[in-house]
Amino acid sequence: MIAQPVRGGATTYYVRQTVGNDARDGTSPEAAWQHISRLTDAMHAGDIAYVGPGLYRDQIMVVHDGTSAQRLTFIADTTGQHTGDPPGVVMITGAEPVDESIFVPEDHPGVYKAHFPHYPVLGVVEMDGDQFRYWHIKSRKELPIPINKSEIDLVAERPSSYFYDEETKGLYIHTSDGQAPTSHEIELFRRLNGIYTVGMHHITVMGFTFRHMGDAGISFFQGAGDGIAINNTSYGSRQGIRVYTANNILVYGNTLFRNENSGVYFVGQSTNAQAIGNIAYENVKGIRWGSRSVNGLALDNVLFDNLERGLSIEDMDHVFVRGNRLVNNATSQLMILQSDYDSEDNCFASRGPDQWAADFYIVDHYKTLAEYQHAKRQDLHSRGDDCGPPPAKLDVRKLHGETMAYAERARKILRGEIEGGGEGTTPALEPVGRIRAWLAKMLGG
Image 1 (tube, rainbow, N blue to C red):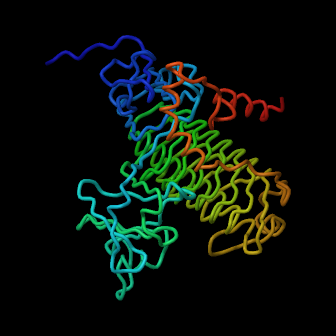
Image 2 (image 1 turned 180 degrees about the vertical axis):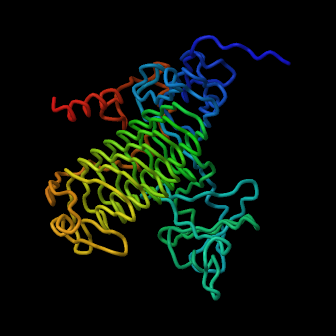
Image 3 (image 1 turned 30 degrees about the vertical axis):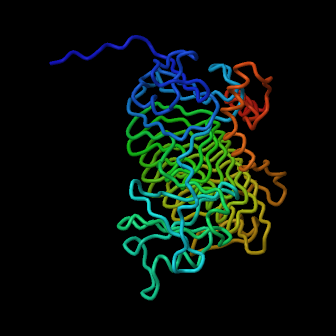
């Protein structure tokens, strides 16, 4: 038997887009790595990783367990306090730029085609637009399609859509305005998740910005547990944060928007999930539970302008809903489907004639809070129509410009060629500050 090396104490690792080098050992700001994927094998129980500002076209897979006393902690160092970099956003993306000129017109009007034989395309986005991901046209094997139509017919009918044919490796796209792809800045999704953990425990992810993943910015998957996602931003993916068959997950203080399915999705018999103090807008659903999950808490979230529902509780038992603001969600502010829940002290504000305060899917729909209160005897002390102004939405095009330009500008600052400052889109409060502010609010101090 070959003896395994014995690890000493916990290690602190550093990753810096600005001056990192993967040939180094990553254990100091001066010896930082350049790619976050180096953390995949390196991180063990008790280790901390500080990732400096910049744009990382990469991903982290968590392959080692933490413990309750020694968590694996991934921290986006947006201030540069630990890495020594100028302040900025720490962004991880699953997408890559593409040469738009390789697309050629297809027989269908508005449809352009290119071949990608070396990797499957998981999504498409126009970075010069609102950065919603294109709608994915499923194949006949996945979705019933009328006999007289093909997948390409459906792409032709719908702007901002795509179909990737796995057999021929052909990608068919229809841009938002029907113009040639060369009139846009297009990126293609290649990675499923930003930070991904399967079956691992006691993982903390703090302060990152994730965009345009095939699945989710952060994924706690199949047997993962005791995970924390705090003060992250995640947009343009299928889910901002995905919790699948995972237990004891806390999602706190995150901003989740323009995700195709939901801002955060607790699904697959996930238990003891807590969604606290999050902001979710322009997702299909803001926060969602489902598939026989048990024991949830939705507390102090702001869920507004989502494309269907604000808070959706589906096939779920024992959910407590408290202190949330549910505003202008297109179909309903709250949806309950075959679930056991307890809801109070929330705010409901419908803004359109077709919006419901609450709906119970097929069986019951309630236009006003008063109707819902009378029928279900829930939210008896909740209020309606005066929920205060919603938080400001993030300017994704400004953010894109800043992250693309960050590395060159930061290197000039580090070399002393230009003066540095606090410019850039950074979180208003560092994670610890947000926790303290939330605790003070909850305790009335």
